[in-house]
Image (cartoon, rainbow, N blue to C red; front, side, top):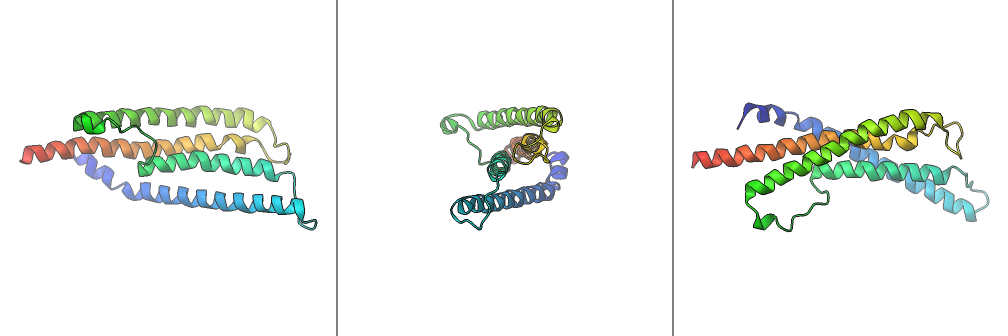
Length: 177
């Protein structure tokens, strides 16, 4: 196995910490989402509990963060949707190659999300304000896309390295036999 893979394996702890951070962030966003939604619903029926106008807009923003960040989490766990119906009929090296091609495509998507998403967040987002909270910039509505793009890139790089490593591990075992 090439020395580069041994060096990259030392970075596994960093990937695991990023995954743990992102999972904790998603959990906190979900808790905030549930609490704000509950307050809004109860506030409609109980007169002394407030039902502020900003709750719907904030809940939607929190949900958009959770949706795209959880997609990045799925990449790390290799749990994203993929077609594997023909994998058992194809040679192992073809399946590994297709996995790398799919990972490169998702990596490109992550780069596009990061670059274009940040452009939108910094242009359109900074120019507008939330309707229900006029002191808050619309930047926060656009920021989930580049943030998820960043994490997708990080986790896809790990997946690509793992898939490439599978080529060498398999070939090293053939040479030893």
